Length: 232
Image (cartoon, rainbow, N blue to C red; front, side, top):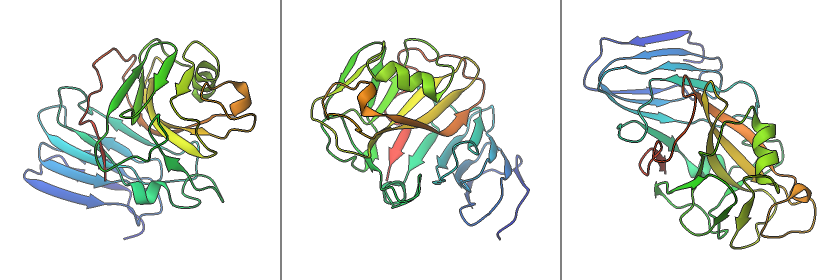
């Protein structure tokens, strides 16, 4: 199937697998209380999880678009059991996010991500990253857009310092809220100036939204926990 408009599993129980990676358009998916695994299409899918107890695994599918991203509602972070799955081999493929660019997801010490539960590093001001900082969670405030995140981490209020100098196209995953919704984004270190551990405006960091989580108006410490993101 390459074209699918809507999929309704609200009455489904048990274990259900949905792979939309071959679909060329955005799909609306309504899920029930079963244990559901959904591989997104890479377009602006609208995924509505059950508001009651369920166990759902949502796998991100890469896209070069900066505007067409999947929207997810009722995702259970922190004490919940829902999981965002990131496939490393797909994420680092040449051209997966930007034409002719090969992105490498790394920790603060520039070591590559490893398979398993992603380790969370909260950011509520100037922050130093080291080993064990897979996914950044910005808790200090809300950020109007990706430009505001870049301003904050490049010598701003949330300046990022890495324990080892990153190289061009090293990247990290990050959560932030714009005051209306929460986003999973990717921060890519371009290093157009003099490479240094402390990021500033010479580093030309880029931020790209990957997924949107509806209705999460702010992020507090502990809202996102180890186990919410799975690296495979």
